[in-house]
Length: 343
Image (cartoon, rainbow, N blue to C red; front, side):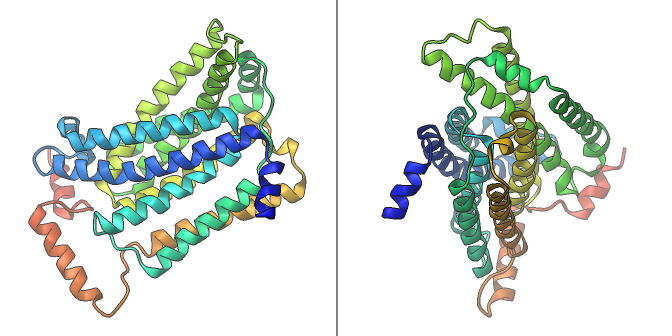
């Protein structure tokens, strides 16, 4: 108890608020992956699947429930960025992976191996390490100050590079490799996500200042950040739906988390210069915590199709039979791939 009290006293009040909001966000977002997956599977059984360009899920109530759950989680996440630095908030998304993997194990029958449980534990340890050594939130007095940070040469170069890669992926690689290479869809989501988080943080700061009595809605920069947020979020939703409908949830969640978190931390370091307010020891400790989280997500990924006990073969056969009876498979059959190329 003494250690916990010293830890909370060592954190700023804003960081504590951001931590609580980030934990709540992980709970909602982790559950939303599963509910949306159920909705996508149900919609795909009676219409055109999202993975091949269909939008039948829009008429599926279960998908909308998952979407609302994710929106609630994103709102909590949005608020967390207004109080705490991205280097604290973003890695806590690992907890949504744990929740998603656990619920997938129970609801979707995507079995969680013993080493997958160890991966979950590593994610918790890594997240705790980062929380304990997170930098204090930068004090910002106006949205124009955030705009000045966003228009510095370093972040402008990063933004231009991200947009170039995203357009190449969308127009060159998605049509040819989107259905067979998981990294294509996830790369688009992650790259766009790193920009959206910076805009979300800027908008969150503007709203926080507005509610405290300093109206930021009169500045055009606030609305510019709003436009970026809307554009980026819609793009993320579209390609994340494609990834979830085409590939296994237990694969999509950790890979998306790793790429999204890595790029977001990089963007935050460039734009907000988080590491300028920390000692080398703190930075190294945070990186160790992040590597621990990556190790946990790697274990979750590698053990996604493993089960404990000697009944692996019989369980795999039953799972395959179940998928065939449902008419829905996590992957895309080779025959379907070939036929899709026929004019």
